[in-house]
Picture 1: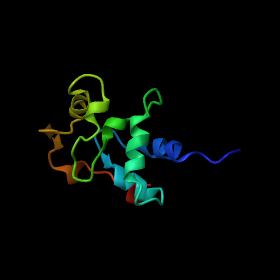
Picture 2: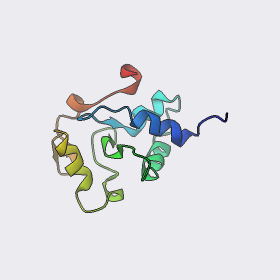
Picture 3: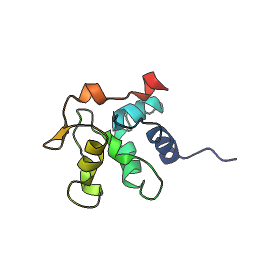
Length: 107
């Protein structure tokens, strides 16, 4: 059996992010042993359509919804997060540390 791709590994981690929590591109990269690959995690999220990945739960290191333009509609990413109880204002998660889920500590 072949080794899963980096993108597949990213998707497996993203699928474990609990409802109502968020993580960062960098936290996923670090967990996968590729600390300098946050941008590649972002590319994986951009390609995650039709893979049942909760990409809306992955944001930048300070809680900004940097991937929002990859979601249909103007505020879909924000709406999905708010539906899970995560507060967002001006494309930034309010009280980011409260919602932050670190795969290195949680998995």
